[in-house]
Image 1: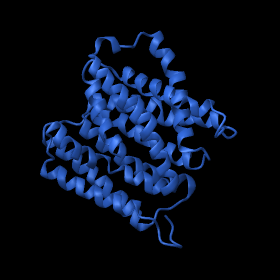
Image 2: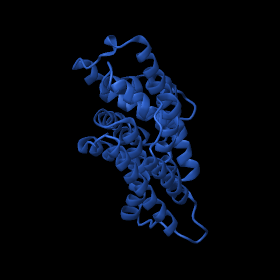
Image 3: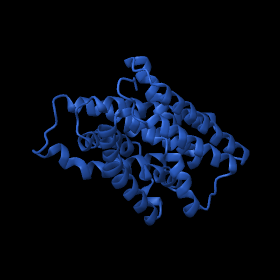
Amino acid sequence: MTIFAGWFVVTRFGVTRELRVWDITALRFGIGTLILLPVLLGRTGRLPKGAWTEGLLFSALWGAPFVLLVAMGLQLTSAAQASSVTPTMMPVFSGAIAWLALRERPGRGRLAGYAAIIAGLVGLTVGASLSGASPSPAGFACLLLASAMWALYTMRFRRSGLAPIQAAALICFWSAVLFLPAYLAFDLARLGSAPFQEVLVQSVYQGVLMSAVAIVTFNRAVSLLGSGAATAIVALVPVMASLIAIPVLGEIPTPIEGVAIAVIVIGVTLAARPPRAGVSA
């Protein structure tokens, strides 16, 4: 979650300077594919039947389209707003999908947690508005769509039978195969015009930390905790992003934002708590 929280800040830094959303996406999945390709080609830990097709679906939900949506949302909003919308609403979408599609009705505690998470999100949005950062409807739409896609991926991965690192490798591979040819053919690259230090930072964070570390560890968390608890913990990202922003950017939360963050923490605690024996999740 620490890497995810920093990702919103680092990505916002990139797309508001020389680099574009296309460059961020290319660095993330191009470098990620190079690092994780041995997982797909090695003889040990062979992929189960249907893994390549499943990986294509995963890349559509949590690969290049997801990154592009979040990056566009970051261009239209801010790092604080983006980190508050996408991770915070993801567990709510996950719970709603499980309830409607799988008939997995959440218990009262988890419903109360979802309500608290939404209330905290509203508080953060109001706090940002009062501070002069007007919310962008188009930006919020991109972030909400990305959140729903993340939720679908999380639920699908839990039932896929793939190892965490296998899913991460497939996401990077298919995203690179589908995105990089268009990136090069339409001359979308702006890496040469950006300072070397900026490209280096983005390469390490996007390609190594996000693709080779964060995706694998998140998948592992889903395997160990279950999709409900894992997605609820993701709602802590805006809290951690706010904490990171204090020493790094000098951004101190307003009193309204502080209260909203506390409400989100309470919601995450309720939503991530495992159900008692004999009680539905």
